[in-house]
Image (cartoon, rainbow, N blue to C red):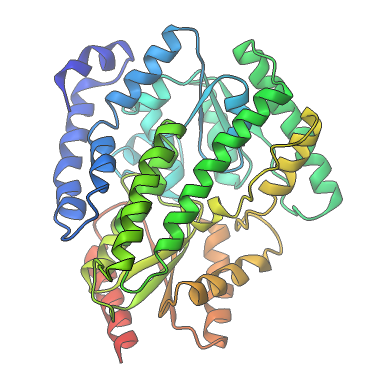
Length: 427
């Protein structure tokens, strides 16, 4: 990354020495995980560039946007509707939270037995390592788990933070009323932050932008159904992860290019693995950049990841396209209530739909097995792991459940388990 960004990072208050060490540690990881892959789609060059500039060019764009009076809203979760943020004239970005480096800083305030995603996110803020925290005018959290809720209380000591309450029985009328009122309050908060009134026309434009983003990701997912797979799971998860950072219009344009290339590959039977390589669905916790550990282990073991049932996968796409022809702001908000209630997060109860989603993915993507992925101390997904794997086995679908964190300490153990699972699938 260019040294020309150092002055910007300094002005943002980053700890330059630690930040240099962080970026230096990512380079060999990216080289090993991504750049060593053979026969990658040429269009992945754009996403390599985005990662190479992840703390550079994109941050500079946000800094320049703020200098013109724009506001940046940062989020952790799917339950903050991007449509509302865009309609308010702000930019929404996902926050850092996938690295082990920052956890030691978080553990000065937070308990060790908290999930690594929460600790990593908080650690990025208090260690001054994430430029996205630094450019945020408002952090919007949500009540998807108790650990996050309590972390936001700590986070609010360091940055303006607003929390949206997510109802945990989403299909009841009461829950939809509560969610509707929460979205109205969020709308008011965003209008207060930006000074811009959210109108029907602004919402229509924002809905169209976000619908296009989800649609192009659906096309990418659709391409992964082909045998042989035209793209690795590692590359596919990277594209999804970048969708939370990049400018949405540019992201759509570049991902359309990737999809067209994948469609050509499918016509030519060109894949990144052999046709008979075992096909895996990963189900469970979300994966934030640079958490590529499980994908790398699976694909280094001779299989290919064809889908992710997670918030960085199919759950994001389960938010159906919102009707852009709504006639009033309230009508748009009610459409968002319906669309966002379709995310089957483990924070919900009873959440039987999630099991059905995993089974459906196995069938649609011709998968040979499922690996349930759980971050240490993520209790909702840990509890549901048994339910999901039992249901899969009852249907004759091979499945294992693993629990891990962001460290490299268990890579050997995980590799042994994954290799044994893949060998079993080959028989």
